[in-house]
Length: 341
Image 1: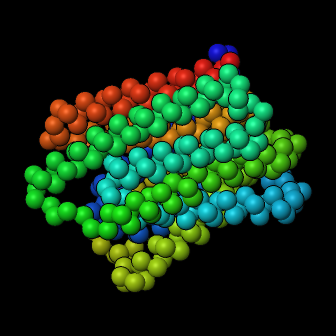
Image 2: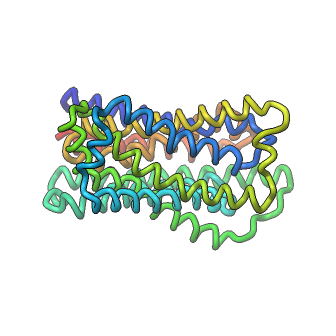
């Protein structure tokens, strides 16, 4: 494994950790509902910070866009908007089936589709090679680890629900369908990155560093995705008449600051993932995507333990969780072997 590949994998892991950590401040905002925090977080994380980052790292940014073909920009934006729909569906799905099972289904589908389909479509000649076999074997391990982690999360939620006598959830089947759709749509974030290579080449020609050349892609992807996220937030705020909470109440400044930090941390994770992918070589987005998904799951589990979400869980739950994380790490290792060969 060469040094550049090792650096790229390290950046992908760091990006996944940040992306899996960005929502921690939400635990300290009890007065705001999901739509309040998500609207502010989305605006800064998907619009303000990406534009600032692109303007700072890509010379002649607007000329880059003017030279890009309209079809490329439209395709990237459409993938981004579809990803935004998936991002919105994530919230709807996990409220019906629970966070553990919901995230396992969503990220499992997202990781598999976001990696395998670009490999099959763009690099079909490498699908049935030792490198392709290694990537697919790693994805199998990742999927197995996600299943084990979901079992641990599901058992934990049932145990905690039994302790506080919470009634059974309703709309479970509908929730599963929503989670599947969320996984399919969310995988399109990586499709936007994979199919945005022409825009990336224009950035390089304008003088951008290779690690920063994907910045204009993120602006289009996330900007389009913001409309889907913001649209649903505005609908909920209008429906429940919750606009006043954005401008009044105790700790209002702390809530805004926390939401802005969420957006900045989330985009930092996405941007660092893009830098890592650039260092991983031609199969960067295909190799890096499942690793990125796994690190998000691992970071979310770590923060869950640190913030007390796993308090009171049985030894069986911890056993499933630990085995699942070991299998996930094994999947990362197998994928890295294939990518570094």
